[in-house]
Image (cartoon, rainbow, N blue to C red):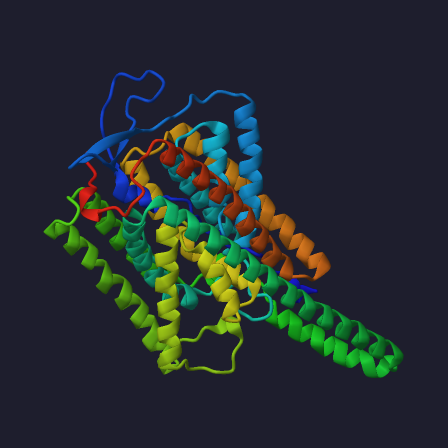
Length: 467
């Protein structure tokens, strides 16, 4: 069935305490430890002392890159995590970080940076795969560029706000919220998958009944409608080139926003927290992101643009609904930045809840999250937060896994006719990520309690990056 030729993608991103590092890391040169790289960075964190705050330096641990069981097991887990994560549209970061810390031997901060690189590689491969794919039932690309243009800028603004909250909130609260959010999202996605499975079962029964009716009818009466239907289907599923399948104007706007926000974020890394320049650079993100989303919202409200992937007969969206959509994008970014998830975990279920088909939801969410993921990679590279050879190797693993996962799942869905498989993969990936990240978080909290470290709220202004 050609209507079922779609590619379930969404990578998302992502979600391991990555953006937290931007506020909490500072570079500190040290020559006494031979087991770490000479250019390693140290993180400054506030701990409780008698009357003042004392600063402790967190030393990054980069194991030597050599072939062994750690690399083999890590590659297998990374491959599976990327394959399931990109199909489900969540990137696989919740699987990458525990693998990099517990098996390969990286410290948590370096693991999140390499994880972001892997997510970017898998997301980029998924987007490349989707550029030539069409909507499963409509004559449009599988990526809804108008939907991405409405949500992506607000998502990036929300991530900036969430990262600040991440620095302020204590680790025990972040771990608790992470477990609750992951379990809630996985349960919600599973229930949505069950609902979609039931609808697909009903449609398949109706299709079989129609086939039986056509078989019992006279061949002379049945041939003509079938031929006409076949012609219409071919018109709907016409082949188009990649150049024609990309909405270049919307893509150009998103790339421009990406460049502007990246420049502001890089500049902010070289300023003192809570200084006048720091707040100016932060506030400059508001007109860039809000202005872009408002531009798209006005066009949608006037009917000059439409979220066509929903297949709605309604051409114009009400103002209140557009405000709700933009608020949801902002909240998704805040939650993602707070919990270190990126926005993929939130955008995917949100798009499905809005009535977007699973394959379009996956592709559009992955497309949107590619921008924020790649932005983090650029910042991490400039801060020398990860070893490049290790990152390149695991990016290659994640990229290959994403392409293999997309191809295999697309074939399976074409055979079974069950788009709900994407939702079930999403639910499974989120659940496994929640268990693994939650377990690592709890283990770290126990160590901090044993060392009697400060477990209270932090002060954003006490953190700064020193180059």
